[in-house]
Length: 177
Image 1 (spheres, one colour):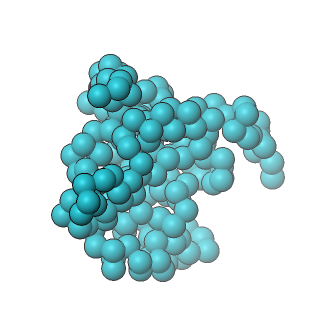
Image 2: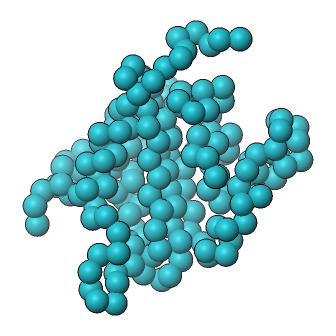
């Protein structure tokens, strides 16, 4: 059955965003892919294990199945990106032994997220932290282009005020140092 208004592409996507994470753990735990995939149906024992597991799913859109793990819901892309920035600043990525950046710099990550999220493209930031743990957190588009059959875990009218942040913080991260 075709859903009303579908198919949708990044050219005509409209919606809101949900934040998930952060998950911070060992690389070994992250490699256990079987627990990071849902089963064949909602009552499948694998799916039941999957929705309770705190590790990030193999497919970003599957976060929407983990309804009790929604960390925030936004109708403003700036607020969603500010949430990503807060997670990044709380657990920054490692720096290489030679002092150079090991990952894309924060302003570039912010620019990318501000560009693709309004087009319905999910964003995940995943990297090794300074404590050598893997950090992963995502902003997932809802309705999701890849998993459009999944229900919204937390409609925007349920947004709490504590998920919002001053948008000037996002702009200041883009300013040249």
